[in-house]
Length: 341
Length: 164
Image (cartoon, rainbow over all chains, first blue to last red):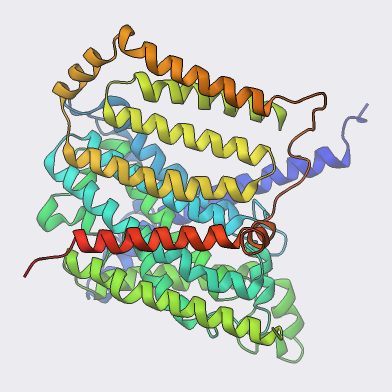
């Protein structure tokens, strides 16, 4: 009677269930980052922030979501209809899609492919279309300027984003993120790859358009930039995609430079509980490290002013690109020297 | 994988035709992006994962972005669409179609399997294999391409120079 339930089928269904759990967990984390950001910014600015709805104000996100769902979804009559609708979907889905490559524990993670890092770069390259199309389809000057700025910025920062990550790839000898985590056992990549990390941090900030790289939507000069004309849930998708992007990029930073699920420092060598800390709770380490980076994004927003546009572009081409190239050269030389070539 | 190949190939053909006959420049470029993405899928089904990733990163993610960027900046309006519609007449299509047919026939005769057919996608081409091939037998081609790119870089720098 149950002969159709083969081990293969169970594995496939379990894999799908895991993927859905990861997706829901990631989107919920992203949604609650809005609450976290408002509370943390308030804390650093010596005020309370949203603390009325539910315990600690945790219900604020739910209230906001209900509100944004019931708002009128207005489309400007002068907009290019299809592209106008397509842009927020692209923004949201591409950022979520990039998360499939991030391994959270040795067993949890949606995809385990040998090309993971290349596919991430491909998705990051496509993500710029969301902002471009949003800016162009709105058919308004502020949106178009925001879209143009964003495109120029993203292209400049993508050039060395890939180069900054190639040092990590050379060290691990693989594009597979699980291999990269495994190769960091003992010494996290952030130490030998410090130059790559220095170039990666601004690139990661630029990918998700966060402060100080939020010039595409600089509200003091461009109203809201590329999503000026958006309202209701379409605007909501642009906003949530930013937070999904932060979760995704934080997870990727941890995976690439901070050992993924590896226990930090000497925690796995504490007598008695060391084996438990080192082996049994990989997700706790991954989540804790990712949380630190997510909070770091908020702190950057609280602490730094927005630089001028030309300063952002010259920082990319005159500082980050050379640093990434030097890192690539040094890493390649050291790896070859160690291999005895 | 067979089914994926045929679906992706159909989308690629459809999108490429739309690139030619669409009158809105930005829409035409978006169809071109779609065409490149489906060609990347075709590469993927054939086992060339690295080529597929590069197709998306380089063509769809960088070159086409610049195309769309420029067309967006020109901000071509309804006037251009009318002009395009007028240019897309049947007599104007005859010679390009004939030229394309000759090219297709040439390619077809070259690629048509003579007596044997080998299934594609039996072997996965890894990035390592591509790298070893590029820096082994094709080293000269890589060096020539890099010189060409350097020349382009220098020229672009010269054109973008401020005279002061």
